[in-house]
Image (cartoon, rainbow, N blue to C red; front, side, top):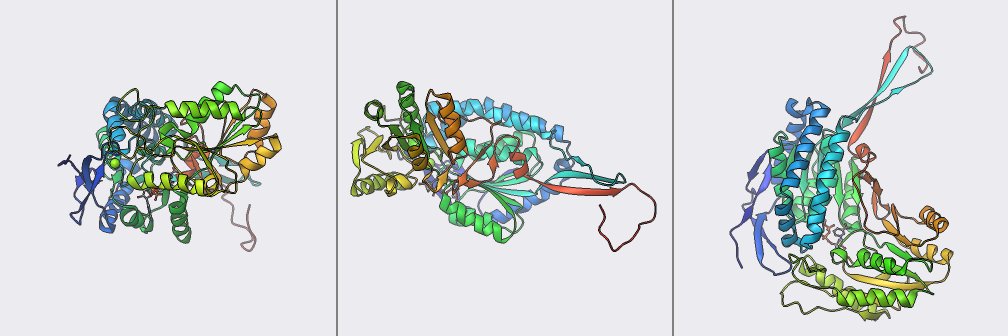
Length: 495
Ligand code: NAI
Ligand code: MG
């Protein structure tokens, strides 16, 4: 199928064509139909967007807007996202192959993120600081940074953009977003909704295009005050060295290889559902995927059987259908990467208990079977590296100390799941696991209120929660001398 649908950059409140005149295709990974062409952004387009954002940052219509009114705009944007939930859910499902059901659930939760930050907007404040001298009034101002660059991936474009956009705006910044080249459409639609909500032109800008072109140009733009990035650890490392050399901040939400641990005392039916949720939901294309499953040896066989049986019965196919449980991987390279990891696992000595190949769906798309690997251990690349697909590595363990050491023996530290009915063990493990999010008897639970941080190579900085406000503000300390008597000895430090 061909299409005439075109998307342009969104800069200064308008859709504008790319300066190169070039567009690139985005396909539906379930059908391989071309959905639309999006503007291929380059450094000139990025410069134009950053200039618009820099001007908007100084525009009194934004700079002098009361914090409460900033909150009103965010609340209005949340309303509009809710009103357009069906449209947005379908657009994103077609673009990245995520289940429409899952997208509807994400969209149902999304307004809450805008409402949460709308509520926070007028509670962002400094402190008055006591000092040793009563004459000195010292207070802090929490100020916006300026132009924030946001670079987002394809696996949950709207949700992951929202995690950056809402706090960046609540704190009074302006933003230039570079969405993934695989999923440009919904972020552009979101920007248009923000315009409709009444944000002044230039406050929110979107430049579409490739990572090495538009993405790299955004990272290198000298007027940026900060980069907020979600994506692979490799790209995150490149961004971090660039921002570090210019002494600007970055918030990085990167990869994972999260352990999902099933103890002997767990409710095994629930735990096996939790394992399935951890690795087969969203076809495993989530940073928080529970890709390393550890099961106590006394329940290992039962858990394996339950998970493998469920994996074999997963309904694979058209993500738009309500009955579908597993859609395609988002693009050809991603499917090939997942397939080659399974081959690698086998060459390392793993057994493919179920899955491992391309299912017969009657569709052309980049489908891959839900796969369970056994006979694996922490020395294998298939257990150490992020696959970002529906591939679970399941391993037995004997003692709590042993599984703790195994779970923590990873370069990543994004999330961990624990399945147990022993309260003391749950708290003990939660305290000793090296991961920013710990789930006990649940998996993939999140809310705008709850801060999340990636430990180790899983990231830097916090998203969500009140803590995320710090990521988008800087602190100024103001000293006022309220004593009018002449300044004493100028050669000593004052307090
Ligand atoms: P990526 O990290 O390269 O892409 C994410 C975003 O960064 C996209 O918008 C991309 O255009 C941009 N980007 C890429 N190179 C850039 C550069 N040099 N400068 C600035 N921006 C750049 O991830 P990609 O290529 O989409 O997927 C590769 C692998 O990364 C996946 O197979 C998966 O393993 C992992 N990944 C992990 C994610 C997570 O949330 N943990 C999300 C997406 C990908
Ligand atoms: Mg696409």
